Image 1 (cartoon, rainbow, N blue to C red):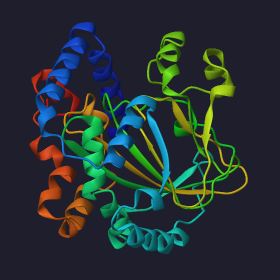
Image 2: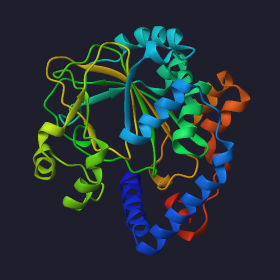
Image 3: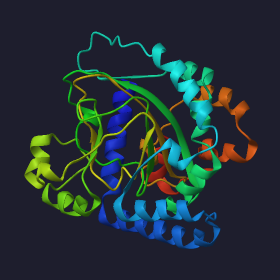
Length: 310
């Protein structure tokens, strides 16, 4: 019951945020914040600057763990390989389920998976793309089951937590067209799709999306073990294609600004207790990315309502 009430409240507040006067105010505050923070962005290497430029232009970058060469990668992969057999294929009696996630206890045990997303180079890339201080929402270690369920993230959508977002997806097995690849529609079509379908941040079936844009424009991110997809999932329509030949194993790392447009949709991959437990492995200067809410001060009645503070 509590979950239903929370979802209803979030949807009501999101609708309020869409009122033109409020929406324009949020956009104005966002642009002002970006301008004011411009001189504080961390320096990047030439390669990372090019990555951010591609992300700005296309909304997506497809690379590999080998190419980006982030510290702690080998440790993260050892932890991932150790954890994979522990993610049971068994799902509940609910036949609508399609994904299994590592538990908080498992992520604490294999903490290098969570800590990889906190590597300073990744945070600097995220900060330059988001143009604001970064909030790290953690690592989602998931097994997508090979079944016929088509719902939620297996349908077309835009993420709605923030104006800009950065999601890093790491494939942990070889992914072809039949193994549930991440699919997206090029950023150049986002605006026309939005208008054509009068999009309201709902999930869209293939049939509905095909009315707005030909399936020939749908792109699948296939790749070997270690393929990395960096995407702004708030700017490109995307989904996970239904795997039919084998399960998909992947880790999703999520980042927004610390002043997200819709903070009530932001959630951590770990519980508060788990974050406290894993924080013993986090350097002090990186805790601000994880515990960003401690310094988040929403302004006004609506913002406080959004976070359940009224």
